[in-house]
Image (cartoon, rainbow, N blue to C red):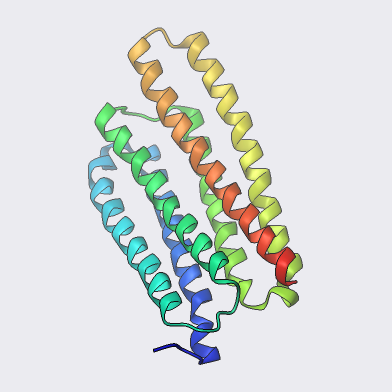
Length: 209
């Protein structure tokens, strides 16, 4: 049965915010491990649970799409935003699993810096999605959040390049170099993913504002 209730249709935005918060929580978990590697194994269990919770939110959005006739924004935009948000936790889970598999120990400075940038970026993602229920009224604030995300991603690129150069110049153990190069790449990819979300949000604003 199709849903024509406007108030219920606005629940899409609540689900978006819930999904964005899981992405943010994953970044906080990653930061805890960066600051204290002894917590890595416990955090793996937590982030697996978090990933399942994020998947459940995504499933709710898809199920709601299948029973909603008139959606607040295009169905394709809802589906794309939901899946892209959900992928964010997957990126973080993959990075944390690598840290455990590689037994990295104390994090290098660049990995810590990239994780701090991820926390800021996911905070801005939450802010943008919290404003999405009234795009015309909130377009300036949404675009401000997306610009900040892109600035954070650019800073992440700078940190990434600097740390990769440092690894190849200073790290004499090839195994350690491979480990941290992979982890830095995954963190940088996650920031790229945040920018992808920001680009999608800008596209939605352009369409509806």
